Length: 271
Image 1 (cartoon, one colour):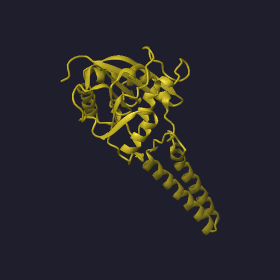
Image 2: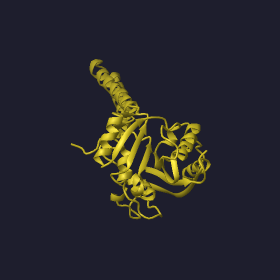
Image 3: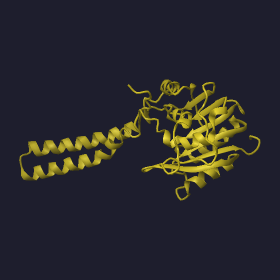
């Protein structure tokens, strides 16, 4: 039915909230129906209203982002700036069910004119990853966060995008790849989820994994470990401290969604 299926994000938390709201609302219906008094009826209405109000935000976001939608708009600027077309080896850290793989590999097919809500990199347009690229898709594959999150689903979605990807369970702070073995390393919406020390270790590991002249692409939320710091400057500083020269940085937004993207190249020998 769908070409892609990326699973339901934050499903446990959202379903829990929906369940609590529904239980409160049903309790209100029962109270107003069983206890035939005016006060019980009013109290029941209050409970119904409170329950629906509590559960509504989670219900509205249950399928956000849509499990079948690659959301290429958010990946397009990073994909264009990275230029995956000449990459023989690409490591995607924190791939989840493969949305970042699909979004980045399809960047050359996603329109990104100025003014349409999609960010525009100042570098030349990038190309999608060629079929010969050896892709390693790394994640903890925790189904508690994404319903259905698993290696097989990531590989299935990658294959639907024309990629030959091998999904590997691993840790961003201890990458299971040889030093200097990758042309491109990407981490999309990953670093902010890690404790700061682990995020810094993940950046250092990306530097170790890259060959000289390789590229590290990052897509991040407005969230930082230091809430007072501006996001783009914060992530630029973390990449610089981890051994990268930041060549490209920018912002991309649509509606209420906002991301920043960065591309760094190794600034010196890996530690």
